Length: 195
Image (tube, rainbow, N blue to C red; front, side, top):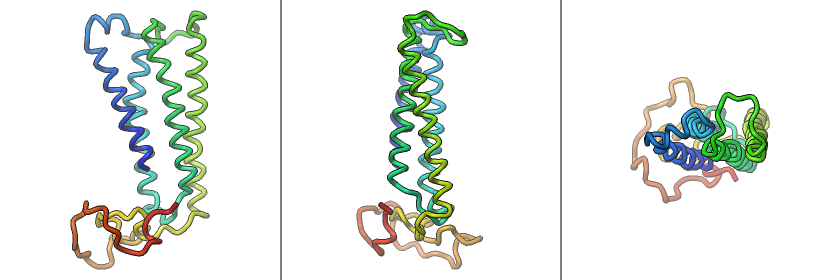
């Protein structure tokens, strides 16, 4: 989950920084309606929203289902999505800077290499999106039992069973420490991590 979250931060920052160029009229006149705009949009919307969603679904999956997913596959998927996404859209910044307009069905030969890189990245990105779908569905039946708190988190939502009962807690929980007092091991080892 953390790899997806870190990817989200990096891609959202790149998307945000690329937006500064569009705020400057002399630059915007040049890059307006080019692939630079396409890349910027996708870094913000896909790099932001989808990466955050993938991080959240991986973080909450054990609580929602009561099952663990294979962490090695999750790391590989995060790498595939990160590499595929950047290989798809970063060349589009360059294409836009070089003047390739969007919404054209063909382009000059000098844009061929960057377009092929972008297409290869899209293929890697598709694989990266498909892998979590497969292993998350697989984990519903074959995943290890998660336990109530597989991440060793301190929040109340992790102090109930996974998946939680209908009304979240069978009895009112007692708050005995700060929610963010991390760094202290307390509790059985099998309840922390799932390497």
